[in-house]
Length: 349
Image (cartoon, rainbow, N blue to C red; front, side, top):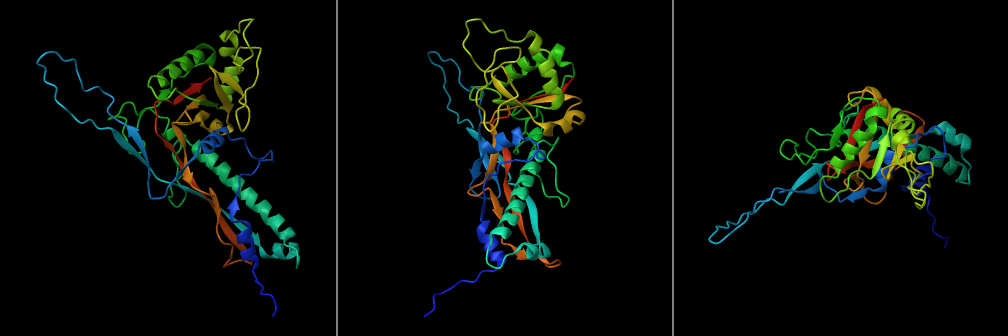
């Protein structure tokens, strides 16, 4: 009896081959570096399914007790322990189309290698396009929407705000649910260091979080911070001090490792990165100059689908063209469990 055989269509073979998409190294100069997106996804946590993502916030910060003495009444009360911030998972998609004529040019009757190499390049590029699209969405002045009304993943600038609801929790009722925002315009050389000191002190007001763990700057802020302020009046290292992380104004430096790439410089021990996606906000409703965004990566992070973050649908025949196509999807959105540990300083010149 002949051995059983299995005949698969090209579409089936491609679907099996691309069941999962892993993280790909960006090796082209055309793709901008994306420190914000890298940080957010590096600290990502899975959500367990459902229409909403619920994050528990501690409530009841005001003491309800008092001093007592002989004969004092001590009524018992049950304070509210937590409130829930509610978020919704969002989806970003890219469509991959494989032209049928191109397939026939490349295809070999026996060897799947040429086809797989060609399609692998296409899939890798689509994965990078999703990552670039996500990086741009995170840096919009406010959470945008697609042409059909679908909502983008939440913009970080709707999270790092001193006003407005987030996750259904209003700042007017919960003043601790506000980020530290400084919109005072001015030259960094004269006001920059003091603005940073004040913002960091304020962001470290509450226990549990110690202010930003990363700072991200636009181009104007990057150049101003290196040209003025800290570099002129900044840190002075004692002659007998040991080698440490590089600080602005300190001519003796040593980089410490911060994956996936080194920071541009350090500010008060905080790694600081230039992200070109912030440049578009230097003339916007957010800022009229350079800006500094400080994120605590334990307080703000991505909730994304578990398992394979990127998924590929089954390849199928196009109805209108000679070819096949699939859709590559990413599911996730930024969430926040503590707003007050994050800072935004705008309008830097």
